[in-house]
Each structure stands twice: as C-alpha cells, then as structure tokens.
Image (cartoon, rainbow, N blue to C red; front, top):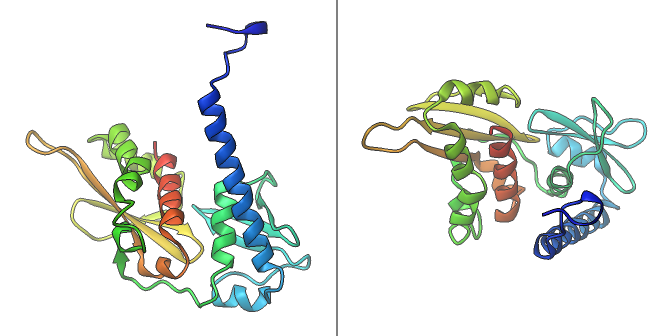
Length: 218
C-alpha cells in the first residue's frame, strides 16, 4: 500500500536497523582514522605489501579486484578508476587493513572462519551472510558461478570440485571451493582465508569480507 504522494510506507524497524548500521560504520571509521593519524604511512605500506603513498599522501588498498584510494587526513575512500565513493564496508575493511601493525604476506595456508577469534561462536551467522545465499543462487550451475567470478579478480586453484582463489583485501586472498550436488547430496561450498588474515581481521571483519565476496557472485 502506498503512502502520501505515492511513496511506500516507512518501515520503522528497517529504518532503525539501517540507522544503527550507519552509526556503527561511522564509529568504526572514526576510530580507525584516529588510530592512523600518527602512523608512518610509507613504512606501513611497505609492511602491508602496498604501493607507497602518492604525492598527496593517499594510499591504495585493493579490495575484491578494485583499488580504493584513501586520502588523509580523513581517509575518505573512493574507487581509483571512477572516483566514486567506496562502499562504507569496503572503506572500513581497508582502514582496518592499514591499522595492522605487523607485516602481512601471503602464507599459502588456508584457514576457516572458525579459526578466527570468536569464529566458532559466530559461524552460523557467517554462513547466513555468505555461503547460504550463494548456494541458493548458484545451485548446480557452475558456469554461472564462473561467469559471476569474472566480476572479481580470481584464478582457478587446485582442489577437489571447483576451487577459485580470489583477491580479497590487500595481500589477503580467499579460497572458494564449490561442489555440485546430486540425487543424494545438496550443493556445498566453503570459503577459506589465507592464514595471514588473522593478523588483520577480527571475526566481524572476516564475516563482512566474506559477505562482500559472496554477494558479488549472486
């Protein structure tokens, strides 16, 4: 039913949820920006396998195959190619990557979400935000999955079934494994992270990153 002037009626619960999310994103961004205010960004970029800051002090952080440009002092993030504002989630993930105080390099070892601190407790919500929507959309259609993977930066990986190594955040890759179903078993999928992700991401960040990956493939 339409409200005044043909608009849809407002859902107070949805509006409150969205407002709470926006507040949480704003708070997370403010804390990250404050933490980065005194960082030697040139040294930080070397440790995190990022290009050196440009002449304006801005840094590039690659996420899901796209470069985000974050410029001090507010570290607002835009897509490097188009100049359009980045998604708030992507900006926060990039800021948290820049906050990492230890070197980050690919390890070649894969870990599940359960291996992040708190990941065991949050595993089902993690799957609900990432794997379950992907399985519902793709089903047994591996060709559709491969087509949609081209929206990201990926390459095939060895393993049983179908495996794709996906550029996720900076030096962190994710590994998506996907198996078609049959008369007895439903399709199944798993999303793993390079073990170096534990140096950068908490469980909440890992879930957000996994959600971004899987939603991009729908």
